[in-house]
Length: 413
Image (cartoon, rainbow, N blue to C red):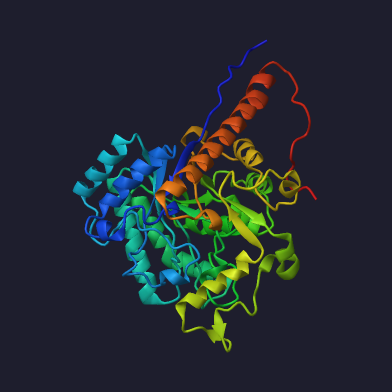
């Protein structure tokens, strides 16, 4: 009888640099932008990460959305006000090498289908600068959103995607890059009542969008950077999503992961349902958007009245909540990824994204043990899943030894 070796395969554990937005004070980093990357590389190694997802964003002086209107202000760790040239790339690579750190990808999370042409052009131009930086840094992927044109219906947005987003993917293909889409619906992006403001929010639309991409020869450029917190937000569970993709022949679409959870507040769901708060939020006055930008933060009540983000490891172990899809079952998440998706596991990135509000301390000394603990938790959970998968799917079957029990099932009601 053949004997299979026990050879678990682990994923690559990293961290998104938006976890600590001002690690380097702005008075130091603005005149010397790459200092922020150097100091983040050192910090990433201190907290136990092997990779960074390098966050890029329009500089606060250039952004169209003021920081006070953002639930989680973005981080321009990668500052692209000036061209990112070979000299800058060498400096960044030197810092990465010094700390034995890799880059998973570059992240720029913005609305690429913005309804105002001038603002959309500004965002597309910035994404092209992110592309150029990725090429110089030898990174094969960028991560971001698709967005939504608020002036159009969802069906019309598919046409807008084909007309204006596909050209961005063609440019990515020319540069040898893949565009990984995070699926957050971004309900607080607008003071209107739309919940789905990033049309690539769920497997049904991923498939529709990928078919458009295939038609134009850029199917290979469109991939998903899956974040289970957004599935919880919409009443979905990871295993069923992965099973659906496999059933439909799209198990190849997911190419990376944000490790971020969501904890549903049952009382909030009782009050507002999974559509969230759509009246009397505080972002409008007399039925119109408030002239005070800080009030626009209240648009996020569509989401936060019914849930709160989880930094992996910070939510209590709650088997009932797992079964109700009210928080992420991290072990089953990692098992399902191996069992149902077409992954090159050893080259798949797990990027810890920190958006748990009470722990969003922007102080290095206080944040360090928090991130350190979460990254360690993520690594151990992945290792446990890898060991279970290797034992149950490789070692035991080779000797015709049955696996016990049933395990969690997709589509279960």
